[in-house]
Length: 128
Image (cartoon, rainbow, N blue to C red; front, side):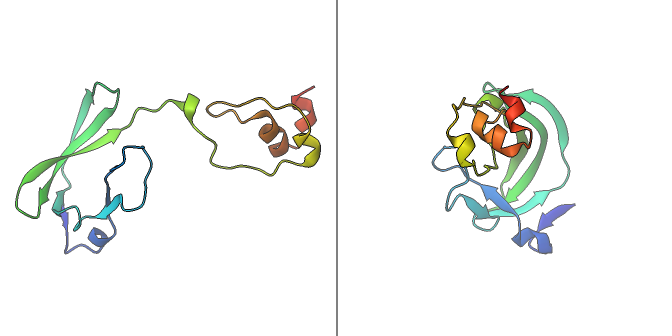
């Protein structure tokens, strides 16, 4: 089967084009399939063990058809990440008594010290 304009979901799907190469979705970087000139997406795929030079795993490979009739590869890429440089998605308000204490920067999944203390009712035991 395929997903094409006859399917209601077709209008909801998006293609990310990282035009500014900053690895974040910015304004104008999510295109509709029509804007990306995609006529249809083939639902069949093969599993793959290919890992590119940057360490990204290309796990599933299928195909899509462009509005001008060309068939191209559609690949599910599992982008290599380094959790050391990740940022928390949730920040908590730091009370004044904690804000007066020394801080230590967190990395990856480890919060900054003040954030960890503010997020945990046992905050004082974390620095004892």
